[in-house]
Length: 296
Image (cartoon, rainbow, N blue to C red):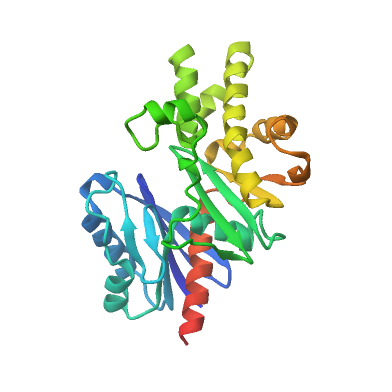
């Protein structure tokens, strides 16, 4: 089965071809997200139109997705006019193949579940740390969507109550304000303005103050994880996002976990995501494959 796969992000639209679990011909196209949802659909139509002989289309995308009908339930102002976009309906009507659409973090978690760090796990939690904090819940090798396709919004867990009460924005006092890569960069830049990305921060760890900032950020990660772990009691938490390729982070999380997690929950394993930028594409492939097979 030949499946076209797409991963729609705020910066780029990654796309490729999957045949028999092998991802090939991966390339990127600028999203130009500020041009809005209609522009993204035009790009998808153009990219799909260049291909022949495919059996299905799998799409991983930013925004909250109604996986039952393949539409965008909600997208913030980063992609104007994307909310309500009927991705599955439009593409199926145009190309006459099954189309499956899923949220990007859910797709990445499914990719890890089938092909990556979660292959040996029937159930796990997946969190990604980047501009914000995204989350997904895998149960019996399937995505748990919740009552309105919004489960796993771990970035909205309140970790700083006073800031939440005093705040005016919904995410004031919430996990992603303190544990995202954005938060780490903000802390580092306040000390040394030139430390404006993760690579530079990890290249400056000989500075004791920078190491102190990193330790404080690791504590913020554990502060949110402790609440999530005590609710779900998972055997495994998979941590993704570009900065999580740094082995030092996982090492620090393991060393400091006992301060945050009750002994009866301490069997939980922290694992780094294994698939990098391919996770969403591979997850979209698996979901589209299952959807297409069920429609036959």
